[in-house]
Amino acid sequence: MANPSLSEYLAQSQRGLYQSVFGPEYLMKQSYFQVDTPTGIFNTTYGRKVWQALNNQTRFFNAIPRTVWGNTAGWRVRTDRGADRSRPVTEVGNLPVVNISNIEEVSSLPRIVATTFGASVKSVFTAQLEGGVGDVLALENENAQLDHVKEINEELLAGSAYIVSGGAGTSNGTDGTTFIVPASIGKHFKVGDAVSMTDISASGFDRTSGSVVSGVSGGTVTVAAGRTFANGDAASIYSRAGITSIDDVVAEDATLTGAVAGGTNVRAYNFTQGGRTAGDWDAAAYVGSGSGTARNFSLDYVDAAIQKIRENGGEPKLILLGHDQYFNMERLLNVNQRYMGQEEYQVGVGSERTFPGTRTGLVLATYQGIPIMPDADVPKSVDSGDTVLGSNVYVLDTDYLEIAVAQPTQYVENRDYFAVNALVVRGLLYTMAEMRCKNIFVQAKITDLNT
Image (cartoon, rainbow, N blue to C red; front, top):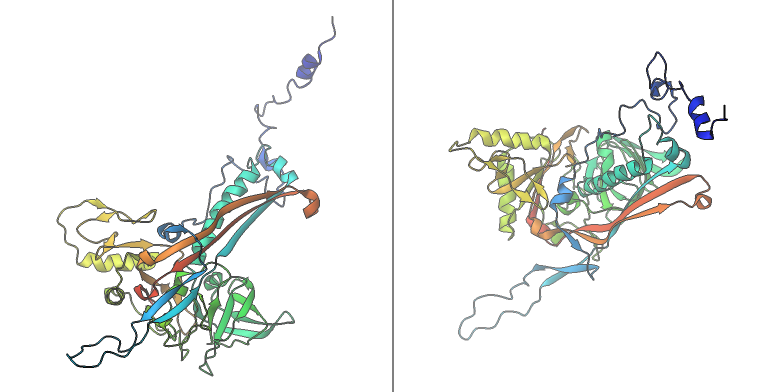
């Protein structure tokens, strides 16, 4: 008998390897025999697709128009007509006194948002084995893209001023200050933000500077060197490290936050006039506040916001709110529903659509012809007792809102093992952009609402 070929020999040697009384794939796919690695590659799986248990919706980001940044670092805003420059004149009367308009300068520069991911070369290989998740780099890249846009949406909807429940003069033995807010509020503060403090005992602003946030853990925010926060003080955003939020834009100076007399200090942009001061032009956004006292949602509050916007020369294009206020608004509108026939009706803003409703009844779709858009990331208010209330409601003229993009999202991959001194592959997504509002007079916010 001739000697078998190499291929025949290998075939015979493997005969029966995957055949037994336990079934043909017993040794091949018993993933529960495998030991889970620290990176979670060998989880017991029933398919390679990893489903999301996270809310990745980015409705507000999709609703705001995107534009190219352009050759500008800011703009100027005319805030008055000039005192007594226009008046009736008799046939031989004197002409009005010559005066000029008040022109304010607004500085606006792009902000950078970055998202990273990585995987070791071993995990890249083992992820392809039975029970693995497949191409782990592609999986993490896909997840990072979702996280990147979600981060932008959360920054666009970050709250700007909150009452703190306490703090400490030092943090881990270093020269710094910590303050505490409810855990669900902590995400509104980002590392690199500058935070100013309104002292409840002194009832005074600190408008001249902000303390930079060096760390956020749950509801504990560490601010590098500066101030000692006490229970009842207010912490407000002096400047953002990331993208300016709509709550920064629709902010009114000296707005009462909780029981803090004198209000809080929020700066939407880096004004060349040395910061926002009460009574300046940038105190003109309408804020319907309960001064830290919770109140039930009412259509009267929305009507007042719409009225203020129209009085200032704008026309509301979007009502932005959380899902809690969305259902509160639906219940109020249902009371006055007129059923003259049903027809599915949706309204679009940007690339987003409202929930389907009826053309004749205002439910779910519009109010006074204005699209209603719920977003899970809309910030919530906190009362003077540190209790988280319902979400805010924003009435916006989106004609004056835009996300100006200096650099579209870029993807960078690094496989230089010597540079990182490790056998890992790293990826980076970054976007350079900023939200700009060219008319804050025609934006409005309603706060201190119950859920």
